[in-house]
Amino acid sequence: MQLVLPSGSPLYIFSKSYAITQNTYKPPNLCIIISKEQKNTSIGNIQAQAREAEKWAPGFAKSLQSAARHLGNTCTFDGTHVLAGTSREWIKACTGEDFDLDRFPIEFPRWQYSASTISLNKESLDLPELSVLRDEIERYQSSRFALFFPILDSSLIEDTINAAYHQKVSTASPAIASAKACIFALHALAIIVLDGSEQLPFHASLQYAREAHRHFPDIFSEAATLDGLQAILLLILCSQGLAADFHSINHLLAAASRLIYDMKGNYSPRMAWDNPSTIDYHTRHLFWIAFVCDKGFSLVTGLPPMLEDSQCDLTFAMIPPELLDQSNEKPHIYGDPYPGSYVHTYVRLAFIQSKIHRDLYSPRALRQSNTDLLRVIRDVDHSLELWRNSIPVVNRPSLVAYTGKIVQHVDLRASIFHIQYHHCMLMIHQASSRCDSWARNLDTQGTGSSLAISVTASRSLLGGFLHTPFDLGSQNLLFSLSYFIQASINLFCKILSSPFDTENHEDLQIIDRISQLIESYCRPKDPECYRAKVRFAAGVTFELKRLAQCAIENASRQRSAGILR
Image 1: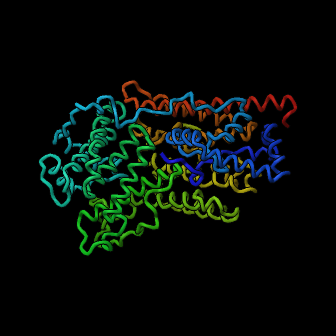
Image 2: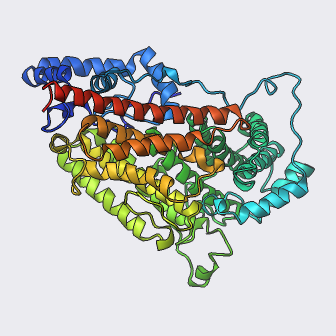
C-alpha cells in the first residue's frame, strides 16, 4: 500500500493555525507555540522538518497505510494526515481527549480470501446456470446501475459466453480463463445490484467475486483481452460494494489502466486503427468507464490517478446527424458516450474531478500562490456549476442544507449526482484553507466564504440522506461511506475551530444521525468484510460526534473560567 502523501491531501482540518483568529477557540498551549513561531523563524523551520520526518517515519507510514485505506485521504492544511501527531495534538487540545482509532479494527478481513479458498484441496466454483446468467444480463442491461456502468456490449457478450461455457474462442474472446473470470465477476455484481436490499445474498456474491479473482493470474499471463478488462472493471465495482477496500481497488485500477493502454483504449478508435472493429469501439467505451472510476477514486483517496490525462485522447467523437436519435438504442457511438447520456454526464464530472485533484492537490498545486489558488477555486467552481445546470431538474443537485422531510421520489441517479456534486464542492472550497488571508478570516457562516461553502456542502451531502429518500440500500451503502466520513470530519473540524457557533447543535445531530444510519445496515447475515467496514464507519462517525461535544464543553468551561473570551 502506498503512503498517502500531501500531494493528495483532499480534506483539510481547520487547523491549529486558526487559533490566532478573533472570536475563535484558542487552546492556550498551542497559542504559545504559534506566538513563538511568529517570533522565531528557526523554530518554525525545525517544526516543519519534524512534520516532514513524521510523514516518512516507518511506524507512522504503516499507520497511515492502514488507516487511509478506510478513512480516505483526510489531511490537515499543511499536508499532514488527520492521524499525524500535530493533528492529534490539536484535537486533544480542543477536546481534552485523544482521537484514537485503535479502538476500531483497522485490519479488516480481506474479501478475496477465506479459510476455504486458501485450502489446497479447494475446488473451483461452477459457472452459474446459463439460463440464470442470461436473465441477469437482461436485467442488468435495463437497470439504473447500468446507466452509469454499461460494461456489457450486447453484440459481444455471446462470444464471452461461448468461450466460458463451450470453450469456443473467437476474436472477441480469445482466452477461456479471461472469459470465465468475466462471467464470474458479472454474476457477482449482478447479485449485488439486482436482487434488492432486503434479500441481498452478499455471501453468494462474495463467493463468485473470489472465484473471478482466482482467475487473475491467468488473465495477466495472457495477452490483453476485452474479457479480461471487463472482468477487472466488474470486480472493481464488486470490491467497492462488498468491502469498500481501497487497497484492492487501487491495484485493480492499476491493472485496468495497463490493459487499456495495451489495447489502445486511451485513443479514439478511428485514430488508433485503420478500420476499427466493434471490439475496438467497446474497448474505448470501457476506457471511459475506467476513467470515471479512476478520477472519482483519486479524489476520494488523494492517490494519483492511474489514467493520466496527458496520455489519453479526451475528445468525443463527432456524431453524424443521422445517428443523433439512436441514443436509446446504443450505449455509445464510435466508443464515446452519447451527449446527454448518464455516462456522458459522469465523464464530464470526471473531467472536473481530475482538474480538482491536479490543480488544487497535486505537488505543483500545493506550491502555488494565494492568488493562483483562489483563481483556480473560482474556475473549478464555475465548471462544476455549469455541469450541475446541465443535469435535468428532476436529478439536479442543489447546495442547500436539508432540514425537513422532502416528499419526492428519488432514485440512484439523483443519489449519485447528489453525493458527487457535494463532495466536489467540499473538495474545491476546502482548499481555500491554504490561503493565508482566508484562513485568518475563518468564516464558516458567511455566504461569501469558501470555507462556509465547504461546510454547507458537507451538511447538504449528509442531510440529503437523512431527510430525503435517496436510494441508499445495502447494495449502495459502501459506495457512499467514504463521502459520509469525509463530510463528517469537515463538520467535526468546524465545531472544534468554532465551538460557540450557533449551528453546532444541528451539526452534532447530523453527525450522530448519520452514524446511526450507517450502523442500521450492519446485519448479521452479511459477510464479515462488509460488516467490518460498516462497523468501522459507524464507530468513527460516532466518535467524531462525541469528541465534538467534548470540544464544546471544554471551551465552555474555559470561557467560564475566564481563559476564553
